[in-house]
Amino acid sequence: MSITAINSPNQFRGKVLTIQRGPVVSEVEVQVRGGIVTAVITTSSLTELDIAVGSEVLAVVKSSEIALARLYNGIDGHSPYLD
Image (cartoon, rainbow, N blue to C red; front, top):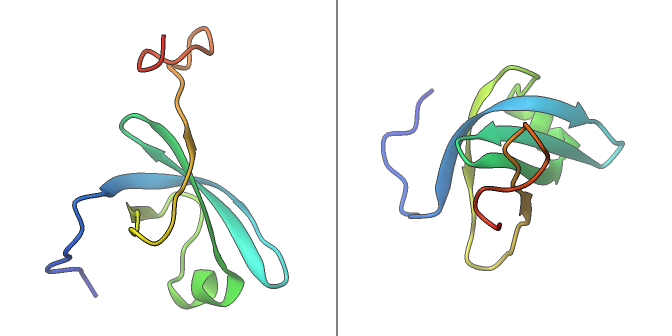
């Protein structure tokens, strides 16, 4: 299955770096162009979508939620976007 259309300007294509699986919810870190986005999704959705470390995903920020992403450049730990 592939996404043919989505109505959200706040979307980031990336690759799953880590998954902290919990009994009800799981934390998924996604490497995107500007840094790492962390999403919390239900563990049942994680299984249903067959998301694993290395999966290519689309992170979509909904207007009813605010997600935080830590930005860094990987060299000295400082963000080129915030300095």
